[in-house]
Length: 191
Image (cartoon, rainbow, N blue to C red):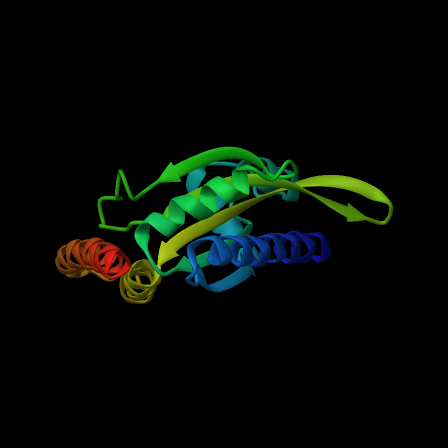
């Protein structure tokens, strides 16, 4: 638990520095909010069970990439790639996998940019590399994902298919809104 908190602290500090650098460069706030969490033990066990793995600490460390999760919410869709690129330039951030749900949204309509990374933490005089998932989203995507999680994912409703279709349609509206906001920002910048 302490090691996981160290990973969160390190990644949040990196995102804060990246935000300061990019905000200076582009003369606007890039990251509007950050947060971190450690997956609940029951969620870890359920994920291992679902994937058919033994429910052990070692198996969780080996097979589950999002035990530690950090999220950065950005103002604009193209900012997500700026932040991802900046993270990848840090020598002490190893990118293990990129899941680009912006280019390839999930069937539900979920859109986000996920980076599975490994970072070093220094604990009791030892360097340990730990894995984490970084989710990069716009505020609109974050709003939609929060509702999807609250209404469907955690409830397992019988009517989930109908509600899911409606949420998918709203995801398309969110995507259109995000694109229009980038266009508006660019028009304002050109004035």
